[in-house]
Length: 162
Length: 279
Image 1 (tube, rainbow over the protein chains, first blue to last red):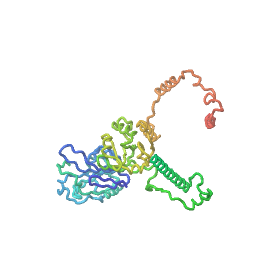
Image 2 (cartoon, chains in turn brown, red):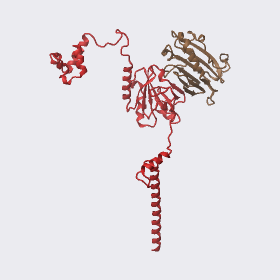
Image 3 (cartoon, helix red, strand yellow):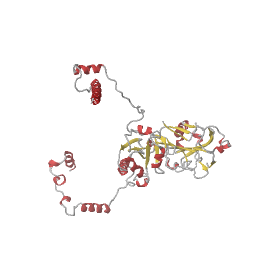
Image 4 (cartoon, rainbow over the protein chains, first blue to last red):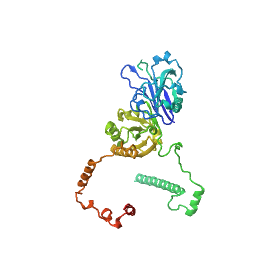
């Protein structure tokens, strides 16, 4: 099992998944936070935070997942009241209209939560809603291997932009 | 005068000690070689075959270390996921076996002189000659063997670079530069080797892409059938004229098998059978 670790996020990738844990370069007073992308297809070099540029490449058996960290100022907000990332999703939690970009046949799910004191959103897209029974267990396999650690101390406090 | 004699005697004694030491060292080396079974001559009166039998009875321990075994799911053509870090400190995992298309893994180092041309070539990926469906990934050794800042200085913006020493082990990379082409559809390595220039690599990738194209894919209507009709005939005439075969050339009007295939002695047996059965 391939293992990734950066910016306080660790992932043990199930077979067939590839991934990227990164921070975008800041271009001003904004402060970037960690973003993690995971997919069962070749991730392009440039992918939007929530899969822009990638979800259009998905096949029916593909999965895309994004773990997006918000600034520490969001911690404690009602939106992030849930403690802990969901790791056992069900097929009924994937809906065709829960998509950042509505593409025919796909479905998605999105969760806001706080883990290790860090506010996140988890966004997952299935290549085919009709095949959700086969795809969701693979999503859960991916989520089971994700670990979020407390924010690294080297992260300075600034103006959150995401 | 006496002092000079004393000095000469001392020098001779010193040289004698040195020569004795060298002879002793030489004898020890010969004895060690003999114990290993590769000695020349016989320092003792023991017959050679007796000594070999004695050596077999008392084998000399030789340091020998086996590397870690590959996991059972891996073999010489599998394409495991490459996981490591980028020169910027991000984490990156590439799964060539799940990508669907072709992935060209380019194993490079910062220190090898023959890698420099490849780093330079990758600065403009549009000129590499790779099809849009082929992904290029550079794999260097991990931060334990390479300095990330040096890798970052060589890597062009937008170039996918993974720093992973494990990947070099997984793909059995003998040295750099080294290239591995993975077919994502089958999840197998379909080519690997070294090259001096990227155009050599690009040509191999192009051939692999042609090989991967299904021969009879599609219907007759949507296949590229090339020239047809009058254009095809004109093209045939043009190629024949360029080859020096003009209208009326005897080769265009064979009257016997010899005209087509040469003398019977020169024919391949299978060709003869084919012509006979076809005729």
